[in-house]
Amino acid sequence: MDTSSATLERSIAAVRPEALYAERIDLLQVNLGRRCNSSCTHCHQSCSPSCTEAMDEPTLDAVSRIAREVRPALVDITGGSPELHPGLPTLVSRLRSAGLRTQVRTNLTALLEPDAEGVIDHLAVAGVQLLASVPALTAERYASQRGDHLQAALTVLRRLNDAGWARSGDLLLDLAVDSSGYGEQCPAREIAARYRTVLTDKLGIDFNQMVLMTTMPIGRFRTALERRGEYESYVAGLVGRFNPGTVMNLACRTAIEIAWDGTLSDCDFNLAAGLRTAEGEPAHISEFDPQRLARRRIRFAQHCWACTAGEGSG
Image: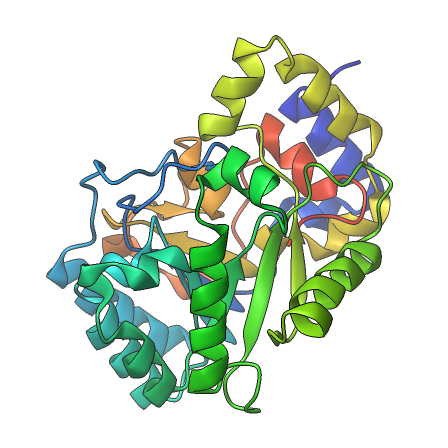
């Protein structure tokens, strides 16, 4: 089976040639850096406590300015653990004061770190929505990816509920769930029902929506697959599940990512794979051109098969 990126591009072009290009910028994703309190086995950025990459103040200022100019439907802040970046509160305040809908991605346990003291209260007052990663519901499966911290994550979810998330119309709390371990044919609605049963019905923890993520064969997860001799078969499985219905809704068609060093990528996964925007397109925040970037040629790679497989990836 041909799993190349060129084959993916041909498959996409056969559905709709215009899907090889962006069509607008609805999502401005901002990666504040690779520092994290965990070293998850599935992390596409290979983040860890020892990572030092972090966005500096001039770049943070530029992000705020560009967000105000572009006015995307959502500014999505990620990492690493963005909660541990000292510039997060200021960035969030600037975005929200400009009336921009803002989301922060969290692994939950980072919010218990000393460097994140006060962050929950600040985000609540600012009215920031959260996308919380909860890769599993059992201690064993959770530990296999993120260490023995499931109970800590549940504690933070309860704190977030107490602060109003998922219990106030202004504070949305969505869950990001890794699809691995549920089987290729397990639909998103069934996985969502399992989470609702365990978290809400049994534990009294509320959340709004669930976003199902296909584990990307890059970063630390790719290394593990290669070590087990499973990389090629994993990618072939994604290719075999190519769904033409995902093509027009690929996230990269309506998004752009700004990395901690100001470089631009089509998405966080391309950033992790070392892929900046396509040749000839603006490649750094200093060159940011909303009109050009909104119609840019998208750069596809082998890992992009994950976003076209099955029901697609959030």
